[in-house]
Length: 163
Image (cartoon, rainbow, N blue to C red; front, side):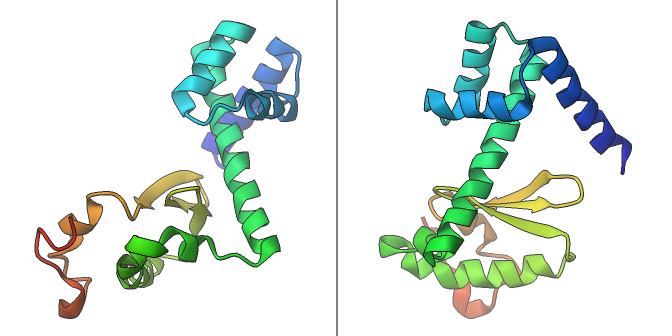
């Protein structure tokens, strides 16, 4: 285990000890609040429970991570494909681009982890649990990638075609 992982575990132990609740209880509190934005979660934990910013930040990150896992599990259990849902309707034309990008990204190593969210796909290096990138069909990222040599000529688009 790396020192980063050990440090994160120590931070979680300290949060549990200092505030008297397990991480799972704090995650449940965040979920029950109905808040979805990270900054809102942090503000709620600080104002209602007196958490320090660092502790509230860590709990909010863990709550969002748990939510991403539950979204992926629910999609898998129901037979839904989160990627297909991201690129449905007007965004269906971007799915081939997504596939080409994912093919290129998977060549970076076998430690890339997909974490589907409600409106985008987060990519993380699983060893460090840090986000590597985000594929979002509504972002302006696609036009910037239009000149990329990773894309076949048929997938490249003009600045206005992908906007």
